[in-house]
Amino acid sequence: MSTTTLHLAKQNFKFSAAHFLIFDADRAERLHGHNYQVKVDIQTPPQAELHADGYFLDFNVFKKYIKACLDQWDEFILLPEKQADMKFKRNEKSLEVNFRDRFYVFPANEVVLLPVTNTSVEQLSRLLAEKFFNEFKQYGVLSLTVYVEETPGQGASSVVASK
Image (cartoon, helix red, strand yellow):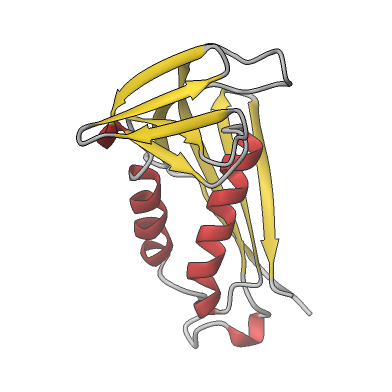
């Protein structure tokens, strides 16, 4: 069986966001930001299932969805909603965040709470891979890999595949 992998690494597959990592019960980074770059590899079904003209699907179907998802994180503060040491209190226009001995107040519309315990590239790549795969499996995608790079040469990838 022969399959093909589509590689999507467009210049606009990026987002800029603030976050901080939590290492253990005593250590966490200070709030800071990254210009993240995202790459997506999509494994197609066997060659026999390709379009009659020899292609799988118009790349624009994938590119538009990926870009729209990344835009939802662009220029936001990303915080881990499932972090046990982090408490949130939403007011009318602000979000108060208590993390151990730290206290932050952010404009509520500038924060994205993610369903993770840490805003690491490992967790970001997993969230994106699951989201993309859930959307793209309708087209017959067999597996998908998402690589999130926080600085050149430093990132993580996650793979999601059909069961």
